[in-house]
Image (cartoon, rainbow, N blue to C red):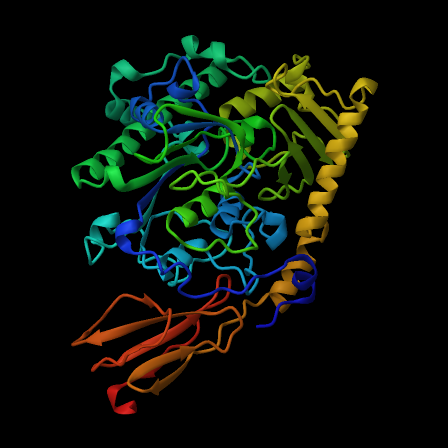
Length: 543
C-alpha cells in the first residue's frame, strides 16, 4: 500500500534495514528487561513519598539510576504506548486520539522487531495497546501463557522481555471493597494505607472528602502490590543468574490515574518514575535531573543491544555501555499533547523545560471538566462535581470548572508544583511565554502535527471507506538451495513457520535467505495497522 497524501506530507519515513546490528555477538550484548506499570506518578519511596511502601523499587533505584524529570508525551496509556513502540511523537503518526486504530507509515517498524531481527529473543507479558494490533513479527512470545526469557531456545541468546503490571490502573483505585480486601491480603494488613494519614500529600486541587481520601489511600495500596510484583521479576533474574548482565528499566505509562492526572498534560498526568539498573555500566544510587521522555527508552535500548537507531525516531540515547561522548544531549524542551479521550474531544499542545510548563488550549470554549463516562466513575471525581454544583469550591479546586479556560497557560513548577497559578498574562513573563510558544509551534511544524487535521479526515486517508487494507501475500523463491521471501506491500514484514509432523512451529521473523527445509513451510506478510496477508505455501517439491 502506498503512503497516503496526508501521511506523505506529515511523516518522514525511513526504510528499515533487516538485520541491522547483527555484527555484535551475543556475548557482547546485555539482556534487557522492561518492567512497566500503569497510572502512577513518582509516588515511590525512592522519590521521597513519605507514605510509599515500595522496598523493591527503592532497592532497584539504590542499585541504579533514578530519573527525576521523566515524562510521557501524553497522559493516557494507549497513546503513550504508541509513542514507545514507534519511538515517535503520536501526532507525527496519527496515534494521538485515544482508542483510534492507525496504520504505521511504511518505513516505521515496531522497535522490538528491530531487536528480534538482530538476534534477540523478544517477549511481552502481555499488554500491547499500541493503537494498532500487534503483528506476529514483533514478539517471539506474546500473552500471558509463557515464561518470558525462560522460553528462549538457546540459553546464550540475549533477550528483551517486557512485563506489564495493571494492578495500579485507574480502574483498580475504585474496584470495590471485596477486591481491595484481596489487595490487602496480598500486601499484608500492616502495609495498609490509612486515608486520614495519607491525606497530607493529596494534590491541592483535589476535594478533601472521605471518598477522595479513600481513593488516595487505595492508590498507594495498589502501588505497594505492584512493587511486590516487580520484586518477583527482579528475584527471577537473580535466581537465573542473569542480573549482572541485564539492563533493567522500570517505568509507568503515565501519571496518576486520578482526576486532573490521567489524560492531562499537567505534571500529574505526565511526570512518571523511571529507574534504570545496569551493573558495571551505571553508577549505583545515581540521580538524573535532565529532561527525559519514555521515547528515550527506545534508542537507549537499541544502542545497548548494538542495533542501529532509525533516523525517524524522536527519542535520544540516555546512556551507552561505555558512557561515550555520543550520548545525546538534553533538549531544551520536551513536548506534550492532549487530544480526544474516549468520547470527549480536547486539543492542547505544550512544552516543558526543567522548570517551566507552557500549554496552548485550542478549545478555550470547552471547560477542563467535560464529562467523560469512564473518568466519572471515580468517587473522588463525583465529589468534585457535587461540590462544584453546590458552589463550595474556591481557588485551585474551582479552576477545573472555569469557562472559558485560558488560551495559554504558563506555570513555574518549582513554586507551583500542582500548576494552579497561571502566569501567562503577567507582563514580566511575556518573553518566556513567547519563547515557549514559538518552540511549541516549531515542534508542531517539524513533526507534521496531524492533530491539526480532523480525525475523520485522517482516518479516511489511512482506511478509505473505513476498511482496513490487507498486506499482499509474500512471494517465495528457491535459488541456490535457499528460500527467498519478498513482500509486494511497501513496508511489509515477513514471517514464516515450518511444519514438523502435524505441528507448525511458531512464527519466525525473516531477515534474509535461509536454507531450504526438508519439510513444508508457510510464509505471511504483515505490517502494523494492516490486516495480515493470506498464507503462501512452499513444499520441498517446489524446488
